Image (cartoon, rainbow, N blue to C red; front, side, top):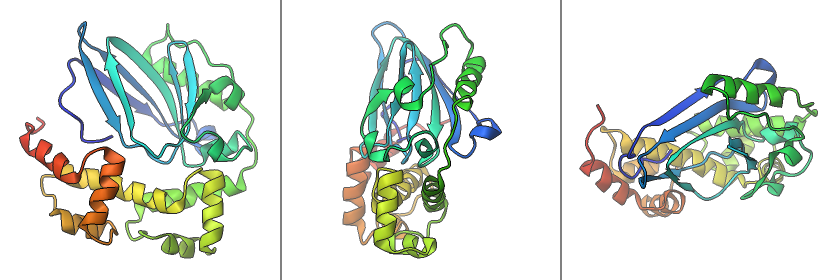
Length: 258
């Protein structure tokens, strides 16, 4: 999630739960967002997505949202609820033999892509809705997904190992050539490895800017593996929608959270 653009006009409830053990290889967690705003009020949500797909259910709409290179932007209004599955990187590889590029930048009907019927969730409480969605996905037969598992593990290594800042470093970690790594990521993630590495470093950049003890931008850029502050600023702006200096200016002008 990005640093936000002000305060919402009403309550927003966030909830997440771990998947059942049988879904753990392909699902990171299940999540739910519920909001209730006064008539006429709205709030723009901007999210810096991870390199993963989501299955989201909102009312009668049930879709798989593939990986995206762009920030996710949505304006919330009125009252509503989204119940969802956040897959692990390459998680769809356990459910489909199609390359991940098939879902990149797309929203596709979940029933056709996942091969499951969406359960009726509208009359259920939040906890039960999350459990029902997990149970329905757990019913789906899964394929042996050796390449997806390798891509998942390498991607998650990028998320936790800040020393991995180049494609060459990740290929060496995997024990394969750079070209083989690029082919693996394109098929199983639908994304180039350079983008994946930079995306995780940019998530760290957002966290670093929010931290009151943040370093200066040049130091932050260097620590995240960017050649210089200019390269960092361009990548940050492309991902978040504003330069890091603008984020800092807003943070300095915002009240500290209680």
